[in-house]
Amino acid sequence: MAQAEERTRISRQLHDDIGHRLIRTKMMSEAALLTLPLDMEQGTEMVRQIRDQLADSMDDMRSTLHKLQPNSYASEAYALDRLLEEVGRDTGVKTNYKVHGPSQVLYPSIQIVLYKNAKEALTNALRHGNASLITVELVFGDQEVCMSVSNDGKINPHSSKRNGIGQEGMLLRTQMVGGALEIQSAYPYTVITRIPITNQLNIL
Image 1 (cartoon, rainbow, N blue to C red):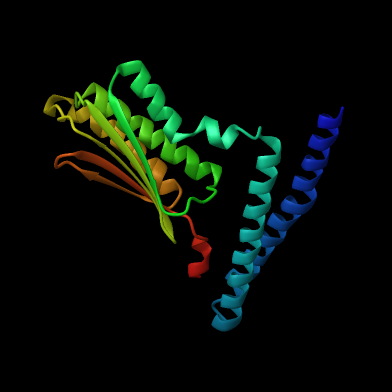
Image 2 (tube, one colour):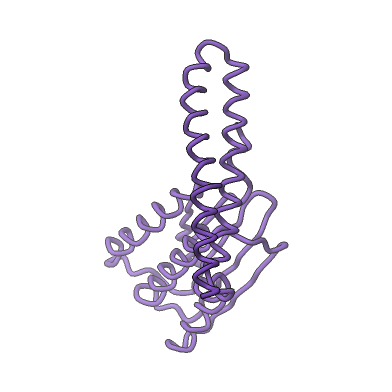
């Protein structure tokens, strides 16, 4: 009963707080579109207010999602170190996991992209590269998080088409969260995912 009451309260919060804020932001966007051609300064200020409203909504949404999810969700469901551990245990391949910089709490969407890109890169390394050592390195910077997945194998040229499909999926996922994907074909073969972690709307 307590859980049902908590979910009802959170649902009401989503509707009353975040829902109304998004409606207000939509109305402000329409007003800004009409104002910008006539008064650039006032229109720009309205866009800044829209940015702030969206930033607050994102923070509220993240807080609400954490309340709905089990405490172990973020740390277990999309944990890169756990993924590597499973790969090493199941395949016998040596794995190495490194983290640099002060770690930050990432939005679930970013966690999912990093996890799925890492999983795709690991699969390619095992199936097509005959890798014996795979390294995942996560670097937290001031403005972005960078994940590199490298392996000591060699890519089979006959599997380039299949790899291309996998790389296209990684690229699309990364671009959806405003990131960039880089492939380094030279030894060691490395897939690099860069995703901004600062509020991108601040550039407005």
